[in-house]
Length: 493
Image 1 (cartoon, helix red, strand yellow):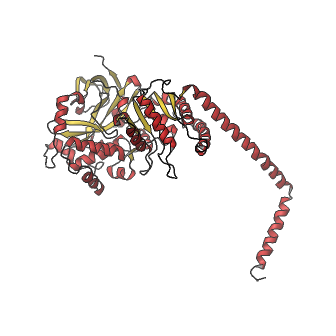
Image 2: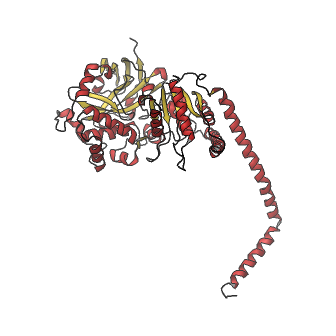
Image 3: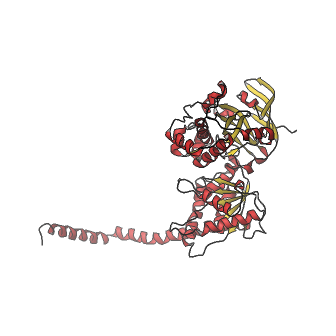
């Protein structure tokens, strides 16, 4: 035996001897007995826990699940829960195909009017909502009937955001039955009225991993409840989250004109400009009292046609006040090569200002993903709105970030654009809060409101412009609370 190997074998023998002595020690035997008895006990507890969680969810959701189109009640909105069109193996994901088929069946039968697609888009290379939208359009559902939520990272997120972000109190869930059961139970914990339409399921063999994961997901539901991760919506209705509310067609009643009686902490003259008209204005005790009539600009056919015919010219000259909305600011700096690259490629050859605006809206609404954590931080005053360079890096934000990026693109292109902040008020849906959007200046027309977050032009009368500026800091706000009226009510006419 070599000289270097002998000590190793001596050490190994000594170690083995010590292990044998320890194994015969009474404490070791006692500990071993506890472990051997504890493992089966833990398994029993785990099995019971899974069974109770599973049974509770099934029991509470079974009367709200439908499998035939003819039986299911009408809801204005169907909430389609996201998944990927392909499996990791590259094969088609049948869960995806069957959910698209189910959503199409509901829409074609007139059981839903809009489809809200909620899925995961935390990476640029992975976009469940967009993939589902493409499939829905291919199935014959009109683009304007499809709304996307890019932050449905979990079923819990999709359900809670359906109300907190999109203003829904009731909706139809669209997924496989096992998924609908859990989603309905989550909705019940948030005091929402949800029913489920069950898409065709896959075979037991193909869905084995998914079904196993579902059992654990149902346990996680109760962990969320215990740790208060389930948001109780009835309390959230009383809170006003700054820059949290995206605009979607089905959330807002389409009134031609709405008149509000308001009391505010601060006031800006932009409140009294088209398509708004202020009357009965007075200031007393450091607060402002006024009536504001908000008209739906889109219904003004003559002015709308003027806007649609305005041609783009890079050499347009604007007067001093309007020209200031072409300048860069600290928050809206468009000098970066990225902004130049985007504007050059996105608007190349376009000679219609409306086309440029619409392309900018579409780009921004897809480029940025909504950031719930930032919205909450801003509403608490923990941070401010982000500048354009940070937005380009993060590709996430709230309505103010969407507005900042869109405004930068317009100014880079030579179109005056201003930052606007105001208030949304829909009492019939118990839905209200602060919002930010943009207004572009068109010659022969004036300022036209657009919403970069939703990608839509022409805003409804449920949104009231209160402040405007070259950016958020220029709006003349003393604090976030300036955006929240001390009182507001709709005047019946």
